[in-house]
Length: 231
Image 1 (spheres, rainbow, N blue to C red):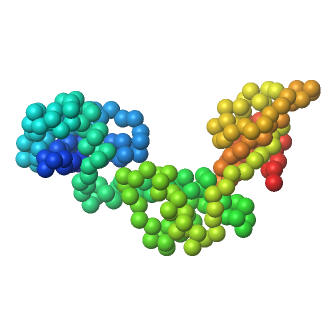
Image 2: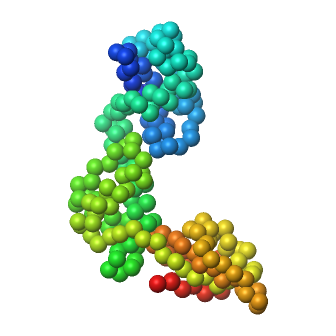
Image 3: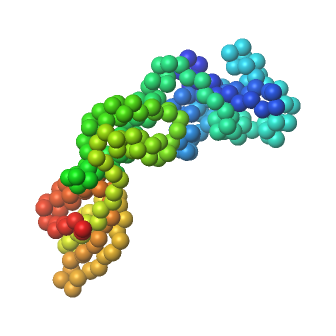
């Protein structure tokens, strides 16, 4: 469990009744992002409050009547899903910055400059977001915010999300060394083994990862690999 001074209040009002929990802010963010977390381990105390600042606990009868259960974990999840989360200015700033970094990383991974066909550096994305005055919601999932951010960036820089297909030719030995890496980058859409023992596959990956993909294959095979971007 977390310290009281590090916690935030999550509050839900139902039928004129208030229900609150004290929870670690990062855990609340992860839950909102759809991650599987241990709710009870993220609470300051496994209690449902009527007013957490006063230490007033909610009536068990009212809890059971409203929620249909006295399971603290299930009630806390509903409070997080449907309620509001009270953040200090410092907490909000920290969480917004963490979410901003995740959004930038997602855009760098998936987007390219259509004029050059190359990925945009993270710094360029960050500067464009600043110029576009992008506002980050610390509790809204990255994938939901990315599209709206991208729409704003298009006014500032040439950018679009794109996947590319890359043909890869490997010896059987190097195939074994690199298969996990290849599938980690994207999806193999076609593959075949040649009579001479070489493997040929077509891999579809986010366009922004092409440089990293080539670097990884060259490092793992010590340069013994053939690649070609399929137009």
